[in-house]
Image (spheres, rainbow, N blue to C red):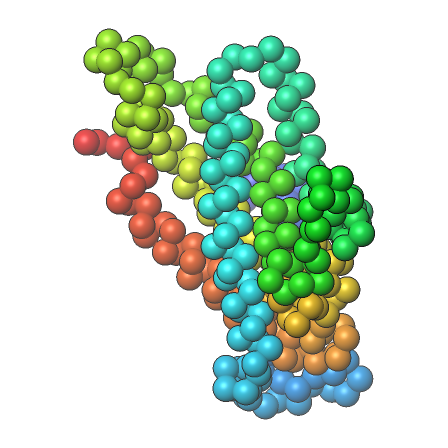
Length: 299
């Protein structure tokens, strides 16, 4: 078939792809390249961008203490919330996998926080629940317990947001549940014949067979945790308060861009966040060859 014939045959496909390609280049590729250029400039949205080379990155790493504080808060949040959410989601999925009644209703109920969890309304609700005179402390006072200042005390504020993140366990729970349903039951039956304990069956059958699903959830939730924004922004009032204990990287980036209009510096922060996520994702993929095994692999 000649080139002209192949082109004529493929033309309808390219025509249908054209709107998507235009949107992809205008709304994705162009902003990415523009932010890369702006990260090497001094730009405040009023004056034209002024090329300053690596000064934004040099200032960030050598003099900006809030940059390091935002990294510390974000890493702590990721390392606490991701394992806690995955463990909790797996426990709930294993309970639902036991064939309890009305499992569909429970699935919908548990998935609801994942739908609402990232919204502004839920962040405001969370702030009302954990205020000094909120619902949680009012309930504790019934039992004679004086609750702490969950959101205004730097010792507790980040952990309160970790609880909010764990509460949004619905999405990984559904994926775990689908993975559990795919494990052949004859493996468990053979283990029971060998008088294996529940713990032995979990670590020898469930975890290895579920490893690809665990890996998928791990990468997905890690990326989401690095990008967490709305909860910290609403609860801290967009400042990272108290005492920068809620200064997530995304909150700091937003304040630099839209509170101080340092667009060039904010672009540099965005590229640093992209590199951090890419490095951690690459590490996860590199380590997966040691603990993730697929059914179609040759053993």
